[in-house]
Length: 593
Image 1 (cartoon, one colour):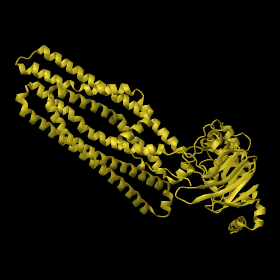
Image 2: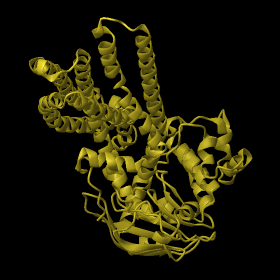
Image 3: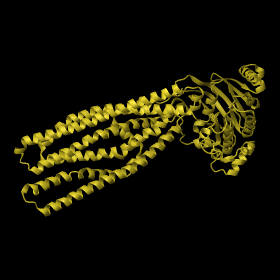
Image 4: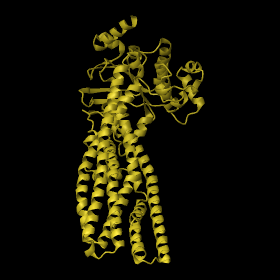
């Protein structure tokens, strides 16, 4: 039975491990990274200029009782150049990283989106659409601030702390050790809260995915919600999801705010402690006034990144939470993998053979059990059975939207797993029961079948399928907008557009989920004629909901409970008095009624 990989929350590993894997997944971020890090380090070390220059100004000017104007001017110029150089280095590092980050996020979104489309129908049937959308959009977006600011801040602040410690040790090793000792409790506290903050941000990402799922479902089902007057329950469900998201965000904000406030408090305590110790031992150290002031400035410079780290950790944990989910998506194995050396299908209509095919969706029983049959080249076969018998699933397996758990499917004598995806998609076309139309014009929707087609060829395709009158009856013809998911057209009209799209693709094999049971009689006749013309001379497998389609098929395959129970011609199966005869009798009585 097909399985679905573990969800994102099961992806484990330290923050460092997730960041390392995440950076490997976006190689664009590494373009020019050494130069960017050089500017970042220059920015960090450049901050030392101010404390050192202040010490020089005090010791060489203010403390002597005689101000050397020339010396002060030179030191001022040096300070101005150092500050300007530091600012330019900071600007360059952030600008370079911002540009690289946008390229990286673009690449990550494209890879995540492409990966979603390579996953099988089994995965899509088990995963909520809103959660997939959140991983490609909001989860990726959490990385933006981290890559553009947080990532470089780790480098800059790390450089500042190392440089500050080195300068402090140069001035006074013992006071430096005092500073480090007073800082250790703060670092331990930050480490403890950072873990809880990471868990809180993971919860936020999960609540965002749940909220997008609820909102998406509510918007798509708006007509049903109004029709059945369930606006209240729907609103309560949405509100509850928003509340859960708010509560998760509030907890993450509370922990982040607590971390930042404690860092500020400890910074003041550490500075006061260092000053107190310095004053206590000051007379015996032999330090000048300028050196003591410079040391205090260096302590402040050393502590500033720690306070900023609390914000950086907040961004980092939020980014890591999103990264875990995106990496979990990319880690899902493609259970419908592209063959290493894919074979090409010939242009002629192929024979389709199923050998002992079994398949099941995750968390459900088997949908198909040991199904075997063949469809000769150029023949039309109808799949018949009660709802849930596995008809539609069977067409998805033939189209390789999923692979069988057992058995194999041959198209043109080649195992479908060995056929190049491009060749399979060009020679075999699926028309589902509820065809998807994009929110554009009829022309653009039909053109998907063959992007290079001309407008005249599209109009000819409608005529070829006997749908010229339908097209002529539209006020704007091919320029008619279809609305979201084609909602401006009726169900039968959407199906007709999908058939013309399939006709333009000129496939050798057709998989049709026939949908004429819910259309008006006039469009039904047009659809039946279009189906007849479309399948002529092609190998076709049609899921027949109305048995008028089965009557015209070369052979009927009957499924019951996921098993093939009957096969043969329409008249033969009616005479046999089996499952098909019962279905046909029920359909006739329903038609008469």
